[in-house]
Length: 102
Image (cartoon, rainbow, N blue to C red; front, side, top):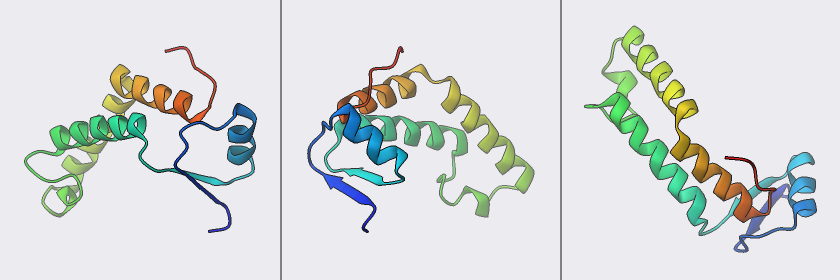
């Protein structure tokens, strides 16, 4: 785990964050509410797309074509979601990244 940065601090300087990212380090923020919000949104999206099956096991119950179609739909909805995008931008900003136009 020598390439991991584990921190409870939600704020790194922009230069420290950039250096860590571009040197291939893995950043692990504990108790990071902005990212938890993004994860919840993605989980809701996946549950809706794969219902009545759990997203993790839907492939066991759906024909491959249906599973692939649903997965493609989930990707499209993820890309189009302004709420998920907003949570991710907030998480980047809270971690010390530059604020990105939303």
